[in-house]
Image (tube, rainbow, N blue to C red; front, side):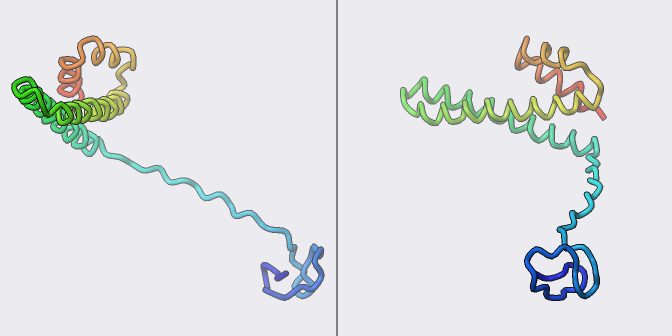
Length: 134
């Protein structure tokens, strides 16, 4: 066993103090460091919401196009389902980001939920336009 302070080699296994410097041999816990808060700018949040909104809009367009292809050719059902899944995932990501923005704007969660799930597409457009104003 070695001393934590001076590095002296201690031959006794159950010693509590160093023979050389006299310091305690118990493991000293490190002082908890103060956690630094990460400051996120509202402009960055709005930019991320805008990117997710554009992704969601492109997923709506792609879903519509692949639905037409599937309806006309009676094939490509897997591509349609894949794009539909992408639409749902992008919508969930957008709603998560919009909910973060609504919390920053002190909007009640109940109002946000009723807006977006009462009329999903129109409510999401409305929430984005309302919350993304600088």
